Amino acid sequence: MIILSQISPLFTLSIMVFEATLASEISNNKRFGNQLKYHQYRQRTSVLWPITSEIYFRLPKSIRKGLFFDLDMYNKGLKKTS
Image (cartoon, rainbow, N blue to C red; front, side, top):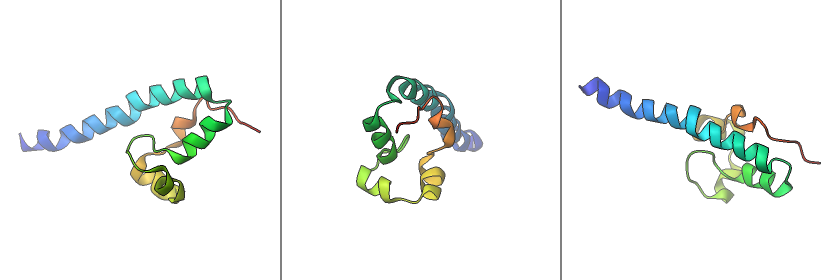
């Protein structure tokens, strides 16, 4: 029973990271991906964990990817802006 109580949070996190968040990010990327303001929003906002945008924007990419799950897969469908 103890093992299940330890696995449950990891299972929930994996569902959030790889299913729910991914689907919504791809949908939003297709919908708003050509807008400059959306790109700025994406650079300043964590995908999964709530944190103020000023702090998040200043974090190194390695910390964003490791702790905040700012993975490249969330950029699918995102259009380049000039």
